[in-house]
Length: 422
Image (cartoon, rainbow, N blue to C red):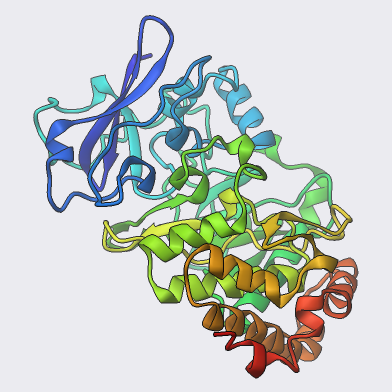
């Protein structure tokens, strides 16, 4: 394997990840990319407040790659599976990145130095996919996350098929969980409800496992045969090419295992207020309230992303990985602190105002959006709770949220009065 990996963004070489003789691994931008006035953005973490490139971030040790690239790799059982298939220790991130670099999230492609053209070329041809995959075809998917998932292609009949190489599809296919029941139905329902309250979500479908072709036999078992998988259309793939995106762990240059700590929702709000637009900021408020409504305690740093539709300017990406976690991990604790609240029963509309204050934005629209989302959810819930394939435990958990979270129960009356605090 190579000691140099070339990083490409929108078919342009932007820099390289180098493994030094000491074992330290660092990322360096190519001067030609850094000097461009209209260069595409790789990550907010590499820019100063004026938009100038500040450097390649902190070097890494012990087999890890720098934070931005580490967050492109899978976590948990998915990483263990892929590493075992490739015969690579799961702690060897450099090797994993080289093997999985052809179908990473967003518009980033990583290839070994041997597979690309001379360094002095800035614009390059499309990535040479002969080098973007393990030569023996050992790996079948590479999407970031924890749950077993695949890139999939839609068939004319409406089913899905896994590409021969397992990469390049425009759908994410999430398999049923071996630990928890009805996870695809849970996520499908919560994503569908999100769309009904005005949250931007990608298209989702429940697909019977029997209608999926190309699944590796070791990734399924007999119990799954009569279950559904969840298919989610990728918002970072279009007919004209890839769209770049990065999660907040990347934007904040943090390790994936810190996704539940170090930062609060106020930190995320500051990023959105400083670098995106008013719509993104208010959408952030809507999703925070929606998490309270649906008992979602998993909105950590990797479950929020920035999207660069024009290649340079960040906006809050469509929502993803939304589900009701309360039946899975019972308790009142939220993923991160929201204002002064760390638990659902402590959460009030004042905490939304505190997040707005911390981000130096007008709390009026921010609180109003949260309260309005609660009102809209209550309006659609009676019918939606009957029409969607909600597991009973999820339906019960949401009913508890609707009657016990102060930010929800007190949103009806104060909508107009408290929605304009200043």
